[in-house]
Length: 268
Image (cartoon, rainbow, N blue to C red; front, side, top):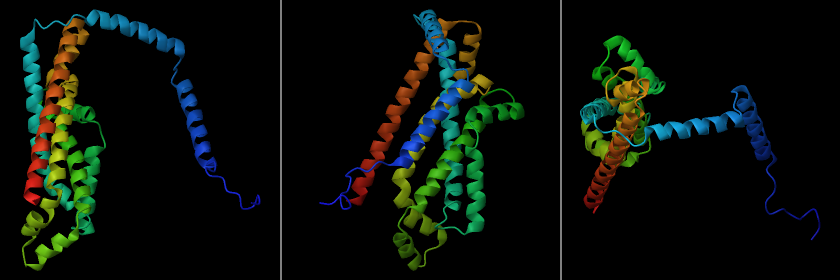
């Protein structure tokens, strides 16, 4: 076999290698710009070890404050998820480009993009300034976050459906709402349940964060404990938040499993 006809089994991808080299160079440049040094990292590890030592053992003596904060966080998460999902349904439908004309989809997608542009904590700061301190600001902030997340995923799910079922329902002379009910929703219902349960789980986590800026929930008590250097109580709250998120994840997984099993039964 001549050299001209010899092929390399795995030829080198020079563009990929150049890309990795550029990425490594940029990481080194960014570390130098951000004053990231190994000595500073080791000092941070030592400070972190002493900080964890001051947190242990956790102090659950003020469980009333802890329970009140957790209850408020759950209420914020549930209300924000319900409102966000309810508002996201029509917005996601209007944003689906395979069902709606461009003059409807573009404003809807612009609204979704605006809702997704900022972190919930930043949105919570805006609502705290507008509505004042308390759970109402947290509910409003997480509702905006829910609209951005659920609206986008719901619109993308609708754009991936098979239009044969939609056309079959239209051929019967059914009105628009019946087309949506019988031609669109059955194809995306299972995925929508997964989106909704994930958003509830996400709002449970975010509800503990927005309280840091005064939007209700256990985040306010956590921030106050940090300011008082009450680190054993901080540890108790962190463990409680972890337990809350763990329980929420189990419940969300159970709900998804129930609806998936019901969908299989309906298909059979």
